[in-house]
Amino acid sequence: MAVRKPDSEVGPLGVWAYDTARLLGITPAQIAERAGVTEPTIRKIEGGSNKTPSRRVVFEMARYFREVGLAQNVHVDDPPGDWAVKPVAPVSDAAAYLARIDSLVGIVGELIEQNRQLIAALAPPPDDPVVDRAVAALGQAEGIAARERARSTSRPRRSDREHRGAERPLTIREGVSA
Image 1 (cartoon, rainbow, N blue to C red):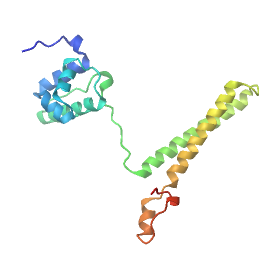
Image 2: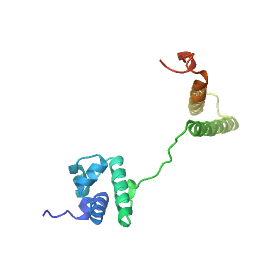
Image 3: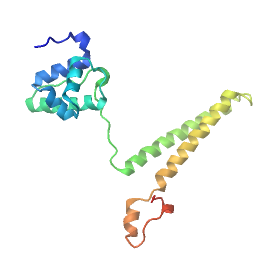
Image 4: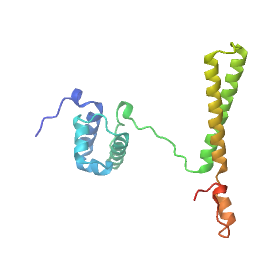
């Protein structure tokens, strides 16, 4: 049997992967199957020769470890350091997504107005290149916000499509591409 490298050479991610798998009695082949990678990839992570695997692989490993740990009533630690899995709430419906965009557009608008007021209060020289760049950036931000607002409101809603029925197809002009 091969001698395992010292923890300092393997790195914290490799130590976590190896120790957690052995604690749960899981083989690298089982982990690889669940993570959607090859067995050598898992062995490289556990052995420290792959210290920067993709976040997806580490996430799948952690999820599998948690599932097995729950089934065995064994506590499983999260991956170490920057590899810790940070949950993100998915946006499942368009209304929630549009509400988030509107909220962000509103915040950007408020910041643009505050910056305009600050620039006006400071009354810089008319040919100040810093102020010119700031004003140009504010104009770009306003343009982006306006385009996003127009894009998010120009698409026909599902209820509009269902209401029209099959008698009249949507046209490109109405916001649906061919």
